Length: 395
Image (cartoon, rainbow, N blue to C red; front, top):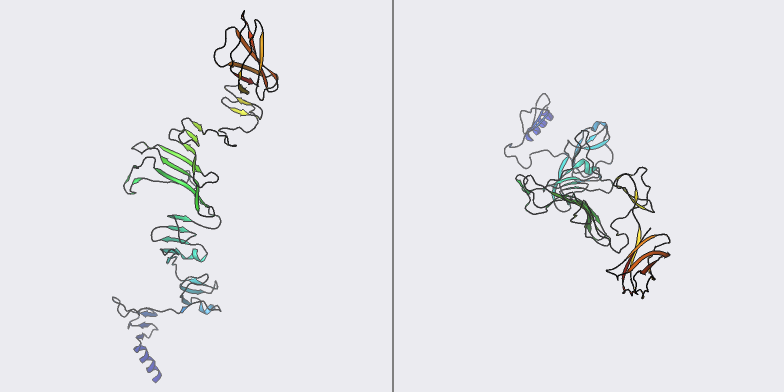
């Protein structure tokens, strides 16, 4: 009887009020559950109102058993594979599990930015965060851009659809504000781009990309555009425009302002810089109108239904000074034309007018050599003046 009295007195002193049916109230004389705890003042609670679950800095070396299934603890710091917070022992899985379904937690990244992060992803070794200023990072807690994927391996981005309306990747840029859009105020404004970056050993570089521009300033019902592909040449870190598609439909290959459907840059003396080059191939079985073909020997063009060889030839210009030519006689001089062979067709012509009574012809007289024969058909001698002659040899 004395022991019971002492226990009851102790319970009263500590604010516990057990009911006969086994319910216990703390700071509460009318418990509504097995354990009913009331704050000292619900409208103005004290700093001590609450329950302290056992705090631990690591989990027990020996796992709890079946009798402890549901055992609740508070991990007071992050440890390998676990984050600070409430955990409970799950006997069926023989593991400690984070309490409740709290997936997102507050945190701070290495740059000091406040953020929330996905706890399960972090435990699996991948950061998924949203910073307070609106940046989203996958694989990084400190995203550089507004939306960033980062990882050591496969970082493919896939949009999948099972509908007749295919996936679209849309870049929308406007003047004014998002809520009150207007036309651009700057002519030739860049609208959107796909950019690639890499590290060259000293800094992060931008070696190329795909960019879309307005051509001029858009107006109602008028939005002309330009598309550009850029790359960076060897020995440089500055991009150059390589393929340009203007609003006219004209395409420039390293020509920023193409004035034809296809406008190709000029060649230079540097190897590999020719404006146009055909690789050797096999001609079509059936010629097609408008086709050009190169079989490794001849270049062909088909204007309608018959394939025709585009004439190949060589040319040279030389100054020739023929001697005095008597009546009904001729004089021969030669011009070197590299590539000429016996049997090739050739023609020649003086630069400017020639003396009356002089006629001429030419022929390939030896390899790389063309002979020009000048004849006097007058009834008196003729001494042709020294002049330049042009020779063409056709294969």
